[in-house]
Image (cartoon, rainbow, N blue to C red; front, top):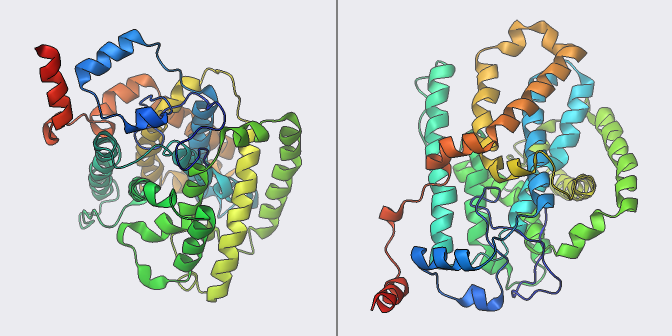
Length: 401
């Protein structure tokens, strides 16, 4: 959930092999750029093919793929637990605990892999095709799905009002565009946290582009942007793994105590303090408290992420697919009244069944066959939509003569 490189692009320590994913969690592999590589103009597709044949393929870092997969499984499980929280204090406690860190972990990793982003043409193109276009496609798809599944023909299509899971794509688009700014300011994490605190006491921000979530979750992206490899090495030490067990246990006990005393809406970070009916200063206190708890539990989560290749490592490249696609089933289960029609789902055996189904479904949705099936929507090439770079054309003419 955090970040790791010098803001000016210099490497202090060998970086783990990684890629800059299309949407913070998706699947294209790139090496960490050196200063020379970052300054080099984009090459033509033919030249890239020749270079890839001459150089060994860059290996993905299993640790980050494992972390992304496990985080997205927790996201799906938490969505499945939501209808159970009204009848089970234990489900509510687990729900609140997981919500404390699952999206912060996801966002921190997105920030970590956005370190090399600049306004270079090829990276802006990737931002459009890997974030903006999937947002439009899934915002329309979710709206049409709600009209059909919830018998709500009046549900409008609005690109300014993200529905359900698409807020993350809007947020990622905004966060990534601001990367150059965070690299030049002093105390970027503190500044991002100050902006989050101002947002939580600003009810006039409204719902456009889900800006409350964009601003309140932004500190985790900025934290990831400035994480260093040694930070991830630190949390993977044996003593940290052992310490994380009582910390997680304490978090669950605290959540169990807090479940009947506070609303879990705080964890969504989509409302201001005034909209939640509390004084403005409570919003500031909750922002700081949740940020601290999220960072601690995120570190504990990373401590237990396997660093070697596992059977699910390959699924880390498809987590954005699982994230967006599982939303249809998660919402459909509410629209079709499954949790009301089947009372046994609210029993302990039913809760375990729901958890297993959620983990299984999102796992299947991250698999390579599903990625190939939906790549047209998640990672469209759209070469027809972009101008050819003049430097590329000049190099191609030079090589052909």
